Every structure is written in structure tokens, then in C-alpha cells.
Image (cartoon, rainbow, N blue to C red):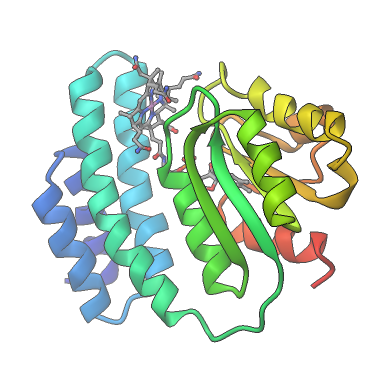
Length: 216
Ligand code: B12
């Protein structure tokens, strides 16, 4: 099987909600020496996007969406671990905290962003999902990060990215930290509108933008 066929099978495993197959293919990719990031982007991400499209068109419903997400998580856990391990022992660049904003439990994307940043020498503490702005502020005060990474996947939770930024301002610590935003509905325009310091379309872009922001 060539790589193209393998990526197509990965995509299909998510569309079939087949967790065991997704895990098998993720392991096979590692065995074949394929870059884990490539396997995620060319294979599994395409699958979960297809599932998202079906859900959006009401061709499938929440239970199927959940099963697709579970297959996706099983595969990206394996590949993510490999990315972390293969991460060059890069010099320590900066510290960050990351999470999904309040009301939003989509964590696959921000976990990947965290994994890529860690593999590139950042020290990122993942706070989790559904994080209220008050907790971001509390952790920013306690841990004094250089970066805060805010993810939102729902149009209804996008405004909570702005709320975090406004809360940081309210606490008088906005200038101490760079805020990076992302998530499927997020754009550079939105980032500018809410006064974020940066936007990344995907995990690789997040690394580039984060490096630029900290002057690395
Ligand atoms: C999987 C999934 C779920 C899973 C999530 C499981 C999990 N643990 O994450 C489950 C089943 C739980 C779920 C639930 C819901 N979902 Co959902 N979900 C998705 C789906 C199909 C894929 C998301 C995903 O994992 N993508 C793969 C990752 C790799 O991509 P990503 O998240 O975009 O992240 C990348 C970039 O965006 C970027 N990035 C992400 N975060 C950040 C942060 C920073 C700082 C940076 C720089 C970059 C960055 O880098 C990442 C890596 O490349 C999307 C469809 C889609 N196209 O996004 C719908 C989608 C987001 N969901 C949707 C909906 C409606 C829901 C529900 C409301 C459904 C319901 N009726 O209950 C609930 C809401 C739950 C909640 N409160 O959050 C809608 C949102 C519509 C809208 N306009 O807001 C979508 C678009 C589906 C659709 N077409 O209708 N969902």
C-alpha cells in the first residue's frame, strides 16, 4: 500500500467510525516511517472534516459524530505521542497555557496545537476544555506564561475568546502575555477584531506564529 492509499484508508476509518482500524492504520504509518503530522493532516483530519460535513447537513446525528470523534482521538493520541517523542530536544523557547474557551468541549485541535508546540521546544500547560475566562486569568497570574492559546470551534463560543482578552485587560495583565487564537470558525479578521496578538489556521501555523510572537 502506498502512502496515498494509506491516507485514504485513514480518512475512511473515521468516516466508518472504526476506532480499531484507525488505531491499526496510525501504528502502520509509524511503522512505515511516515511523519505523524502528515498522517494526521492528510488522513485523519480529512476524515473528521467529512464527518463534520455530514453532521452539518443532518445526514448523520450526534451519536455518529461522537463515534467519529472517538476514532479520531484514538488515532491522534498515538500519533501525538510519536510527535512528542520525535521532538528535537529543542531549546526552551517560552511558556504557555492552552485551552478551549467556556462552553466548548472540542479538544482535538488544541491538543494537536499543544503537541506541536511542545515538540518545538515550548512548555505548554493544557488546562482542558470549557475553561472560563476567570480561570485563564487566574492561571496567567499564577504561572506567568508568555503565551495564552485559546481555541473555539463553535460560532457561539467565539465571543468567549474576546471575553478572555477583556478579562486579562481588566486584571491589568494583558500586556504581560501574547494571546493566540484559533479553531475552525476563527480567522485573522476575527483575531484582529478582538485584539488578539496572533491567529494560526492549523498546528504548524500555530508554531510559526508563536515563534514570531516571542521573537524566537
Ligand atoms: C469532532 C466534533 C465534535 C466532537 C468533539 C470531540 C472532541 N473531544 O473534540 C463532539 C461530538 C463532542 C462534538 C460536539 C458538538 N459539536 Co462538534 N464538531 C466536531 C467536528 C466534526 C470536528 C472537530 C475536530 O476535531 N476537527 C479536527 C481538528 C484537528 O481540527 P480543528 O479542531 O479545527 O483544529 C485545528 C485548527 O482549527 C487549529 N486550531 C484549533 N484550535 C486552535 C487554537 C489556537 C490557539 C490555534 C493557533 C490554532 C487552533 O489547529 C488545529 C489543528 O490543525 C466539527 C466539524 C469541523 N469541521 O470542525 C464539528 C462542529 C465544530 N461541531 C458542531 C456542533 C454544532 C456541535 C454540537 C453543538 C452538537 C450538538 N448538537 O450537541 C456539540 C457542542 C459541544 C460543545 N459544547 O462544545 C458544529 C459547529 C457549528 C457552528 N457554526 O458553531 C461543527 C462545525 C459541525 C457542523 N458542520 O455542524 N463535536
